[in-house]
Length: 276
Ligand SMILES: Cc1cc2nc3c(=O)[nH]c(=O)nc-3n(C[C@H](O)[C@H](O)[C@H](O)COP(=O)(O)O)c2cc1C
Image (tube, rainbow, N blue to C red; front, side, top):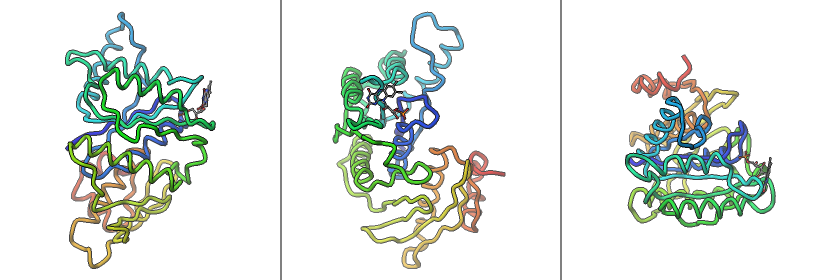
């Protein structure tokens, strides 16, 4: 399975860039692995690193090496890309295996609480991505202005225009990573702060409901319309819930019969993500 890494150019706890990149992760299909990548622990690149710093850089490069594409979301600070993102891109540009970004597709977006959507930082990031040999996917001009207004409860992106635009970009990234033409996925997922709806050609064929409180994702019900039962679709909803828990750092509470049965069948996932 192909893997897409999520990188946000901010170390701020409540970073909007990180919130956007997490939402992009949710927009990917269940046929790709989505990996959030932390930049918080990376040392500044220089030639006299301690052995501990070198080990951190080696681990980061190993992560980047196994990824097939990236979502890069940058804020704009003083008309530029923050140093933490530039530093991360620099670190993995040099390795025993060469430049680890080379040839990999990248979705590039910028955010700002101002009106210009981080356009200058976005241009810098695109230039750097081209220098590093990344394949910048279209649409290549994703500038999210007044970003703080785009979220609903729980940091979910609900602004319809933004969601539609980002879904298009994500579909193009996934197609580039999978080496295929972009197609409309047979199944789509619509997120709200209380449920995920599973849709086929615009028709809702199933849903998962949940309570999301601080640090917890309590799954309250997973249902599939009777005509679509026994096709593994409830499992697709569970995969989305698991992805949501991973991206937003939530522990899962299996609060309905289906989710309890699912985790009994997948004890390794339960061990990692469920509250015991
Ligand atoms: C020191 C500083 C400089 C900033 N400079 C810019 C800027 O040049 N352009 C802009 O659009 N926003 C600027 N901002 C606003 C940021 O875009 C906004 O704080 C954003 O939320 C930061 O990203 P984050 O939420 O991912 O940490 C600046 C913010 C700070 C604190």
